[in-house]
Image 1 (cartoon, rainbow, N blue to C red):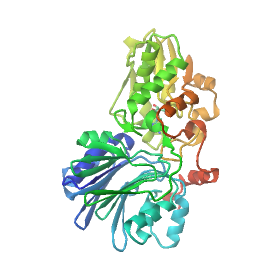
Image 2 (image 1 turned 120 degrees about the vertical axis):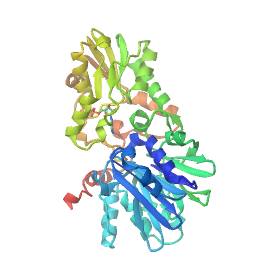
Image 3 (image 1 turned 180 degrees about the horizontal axis):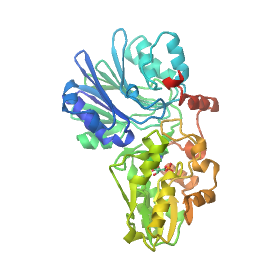
Image 4 (image 1 turned 45 degrees about the vertical axis):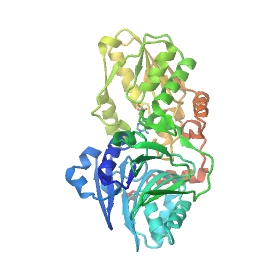
Length: 459
Ligand code: AMP
């Protein structure tokens, strides 16, 4: 998610920002721009580079733009769900891009539909534009009214006529950062987007904060009361790019620290440490340094295969794992390997990798995971499957080791993860590992049913 306010090449910068943020979603991409009183949009399915060509970018004129890349955590995967969403109220054009997952979108949508709102998509995120379109008063008031209705995780950028608005939910589940490029303001999910366009990171949008950027000036309001921080720890573990600062910390260094903790708690006699690329690389390096073992890329990653998980179909996922990693036989043959992975979800990736490494002649395979067992689904914007599909939800570590076919298996303990969290001096959400969900269980149930809620086939 990216926003640009007050730059003659706003759409181009938004495009580059989305390019840097491609890892956050590969299903669809879109940009909305604003020039005078004209709001323009271009959205499409697929990668940023496929969705936009020079003609499309040239048509997105204006000094303000917002953009989005999507992977679905709710709703379906189709063009009508591509963001940003657009709506017109009686006196303004509203566009929104949302990162996160709402927990009460179903109730709000039902209510809005009873008042005559017509939804265009299957997405929870669309409620924002309708709430804003219906709200009355000054823009600050309308934003406050809209945000006070929604629960759950949201980092948002709005373009309401020529005002750019960045907002983060009061828990701060998902990251959102503010930057400057000369006199222009840039908003992005991760700071790697600033690096690509030469913008300076200024600060994070605070939990519960709304920043309104109007005629080059930023004004901050706090419409919803601040509550305890619940920053998503999985951004550090897997989701964010290692070169980003997330919650003020460099992701690569946090991952290395997790790997060091893992090596201290779960040592093993071995010949080399092999990362599961890309997201396992930094923690594997931390493990290798702390264990005094060589780090070797014994599994080569095909970079032209997209992140497997983001494809919604299970059959494609299996295919993705098979085509993604190939071992270097000459390196691993006869060797005792520590294979370091950032997380195990269904166990698909590692089951395949242990097999391919055995077939390549590895003598021993010790799997080390730089996060605790994933035992619960995420309702705050990470695409985790339902509990039944999580291998660690029903099986013990020994059972998982056997299912993977590994010689040993250990995870980073929750205590060790929390030590790393505590060192960052923020409050974190680690519910997918700990089960400590901060929303009441009935709301979780609502969120669960919501995953299929807006599916038009069920309407
Ligand atoms: P699995 O194969 O189901 O055990 O998934 C684990 C693999 O998927 C690991 O390589 C992770 O880096 C990656 N992964 C974990 N969570 C996600 C997610 N929410 N989206 C995409 N990939 C993920």
